[in-house]
Amino acid sequence: MANLVITLNVMPSGIDINLDKLEESVKEEITKAGGEVGKVEREPIGFGLELVKIFFIWDEDKGGTDNLESKIRGMSDVSSAEISDVRRGIG
Image 1 (spheres, rainbow, N blue to C red):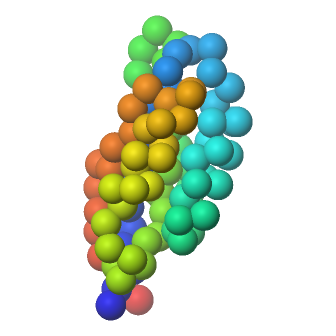
Image 2: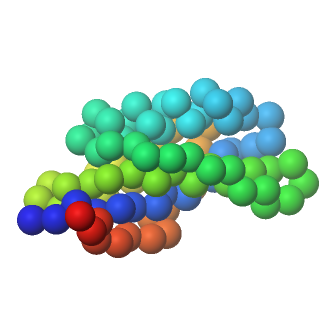
């Protein structure tokens, strides 16, 4: 089938969380699940808190990302994780 371009928003559990380490841990989980991480952005939320946005490629044949989201939500430094955008890749 097709590849999907997915945006995952990860909210750290506090301002004292090392975002570089959190980013690497989440990227590792995505890779283990069969995704391919493209880019990562950070978006200031307020009061020193930053949202980590991870863009990755996911093969549509693998099905949904519910298991991946659950694993990331269960990480100790994560307050929440949700898919904010899904698009079909072109080309």
